[in-house]
Length: 104
Image: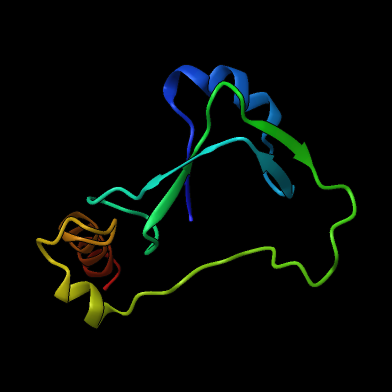
């Protein structure tokens, strides 16, 4: 699920969030996901508010996943040219194609 911090709350939230930590987050809005350039395929997103509380989870089990990703094949990327629903649309494919061609 995508998470979003409105620009006016970034100075308040940024010091609380560090990479490589797991958080328990309470009191946030649940909204419909963006319809363009969505980074994940999920119908909803969370949005921080002035009331959002963030707490570090201290005892994280070893089985808790550290990363989550969904790889997209070049064949699928090619079908998304001109489609703006996902972040992997026209601009991303064009950039990947330029990078690929510059390496060969």
